[in-house]
Length: 230
Image 1 (tube, rainbow, N blue to C red):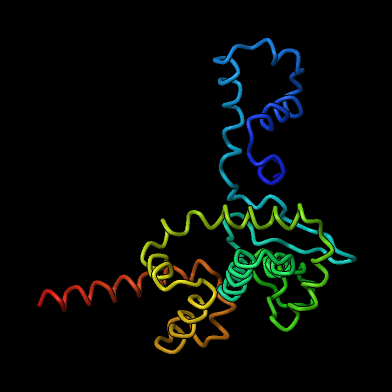
Image 2: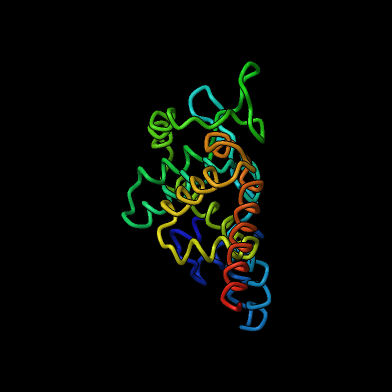
């Protein structure tokens, strides 16, 4: 994470990591010719790809343990996803630290207590009314951790345009992810009962909602194409 953020993915940073992680003395590296050093640097090729596995699965703040969204965002609900996308969109526009704290507060939910209803990953059910208070707690995290959460989220999102081709093509064409996801969610709730009311839709796992949305958009585009041919 620091190589990405602080060292800006530099070659010098990779050489430092070789020394730290593989315990290779600097004087040995200085003796290597270009070809051997290049072969050695291939050990760090994974650094050029953002992780899809969730690197910080749990965070402790005060007396509560907060559980992350799981590898590839597998535990995230559609409601959490909408709020996360809105926070990321605002952060990229204004670079406001509070938006990163909100992203963290959306992605990390308290571990469900025995008497609480739990969502996937034994997380407490997301409640937008608690978001403001949670954001204040997550503002206590260091900049490095907040940026690391953003990098991890971005890495998990990289596969989505391939998995859900029609949905993400439509999102890009519409512009503004935060508004787009809210609109498609509301439209889905209004136009079909497949996933219940909008409140039920918000609490449904992301990977149940997105394939449905993707299929609906695909069928709509195919229907329009067939009409134009006629």
